[in-house]
Image (cartoon, rainbow over all chains, first blue to last red; front, side, top):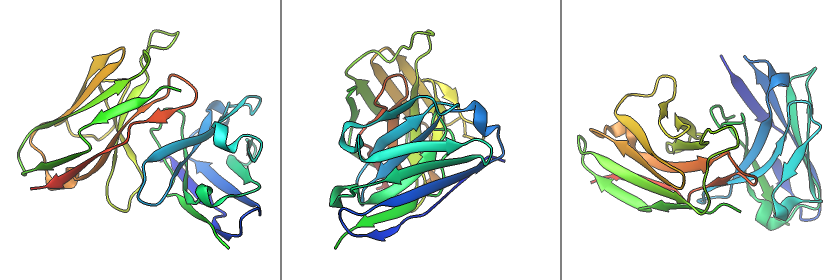
Length: 114
Length: 112
């Protein structure tokens, strides 16, 4: 059974950093690209970043370029999202998901507020 | 960016009724491999999204055949025949053909 379990969320002040993790199991993690997708409170879904299976290629939405870094550790079957210089508009539930959005984690809440 | 325009934004339905949701993209969603990476998701209240339909018309594992998807290029439709209570929530179309990946604004399905 495929499982994606996010962790690392919480309340953080504007300008500070946070690192999210997504532990994957039930499939060969190293064979698949992965996404981070977020959902602000009461809003729709917004793609944040993607990474290729090897980690050699990464893609970001414009609003997070230069602030967020997606990475992966295939030996640990874990996906990461390093979020720096956080802004209030980054407040959202963050999900990790497989490339064709067939599997999603339970989501982790990130609140950016002073 | 590919803009996904989903209509209507909300639907009020009776159990047993059939409904359709439209999703139109600003660009063709046909990828270089000839496949169209347009998917339909359902987010039930308080839950993570769940994929119902992949590549326009393929039913996800365990998804009832009351759900069906049609369309091509830039124009897509999700149909739900005989709505059941468990179908309530917000439906999204999503494209994974182009970067950035984009989603429709959502259609909230509620009970009449």
